[in-house]
Length: 384
Image 1 (cartoon, rainbow, N blue to C red):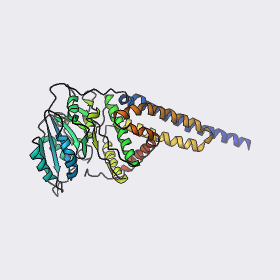
Image 2 (image 1 turned 180 degrees about the vertical axis):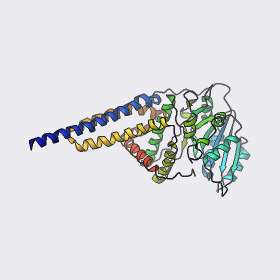
Image 3 (image 1 turned 135 degrees about the horizontal axis):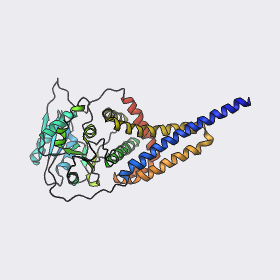
């Protein structure tokens, strides 16, 4: 009997060593991302607005389908930007509301507003990329800026910051678009997920390895679009007019970021978990077409964090007397997160989320990993 007990004790010790050792390895991976990647944005010094002259003329492109109310509220803030030369290309993508009449009134007031009308055809089903392409072809200027109908710039200086970010050799400008703060757990999760996504893609851009941008606040040149053959490589994917284009065309030398607070572009968040899930499913569908190296690095970050929590819970549940080992590793990671996340959150105007970091972090990784897995079995959805 004593021999069996000794064997059992040895197996138990080995199992604990494997579980806790796995937690330790996953912690090392997470520490790498925190200190080597995310610190780039955390300690990045935001440059002031550039007064260089001349700033390039800009074409702002917005695609809209049944967005009458959003356009009524937000389009005047874009048309009222403090910038010397710019036009707004509004692609009205088969709207069935009164968008057409609203735009007609706005065109009479703003000569720099140009409308491109798309009519639906029973034999032609197109997505947002088709609308964006028509907007680009209609653009008068070389430097293109993109946003959405439900977005509103932080200030009248948005375009000055974006235009000033283009320089010799810069062809892509990655902006930042936070969601408006509202009450509720879903809103907190959406804003934390948006922060974490921005923390990742902006940090990698600063490391010379840009892999995505967000179409709510993005700029690039027309020549880059046509040189890279537009969206031809991924036209079969409904989403990805922003992140897949950047993933395909960004280089270590042609991409910069623009995150001055005056250049943020705010957007309305989803208000139901089902709508949010559909949105994330679209994004997950596009991410499957990223470059293999980018898919691996993003998967490593997400899965290592998710497994860290999973193995930590299993280890504590299986070996309660040794809870302090796992809690110690968790606290190391949490303290590093606080050290890196807080200055980044201040830059991205979500510093209030720091108080909910322990719960939001667990919820974020659990939701993103599980929803990403479920997206593998769902069909692609349309943009509107």
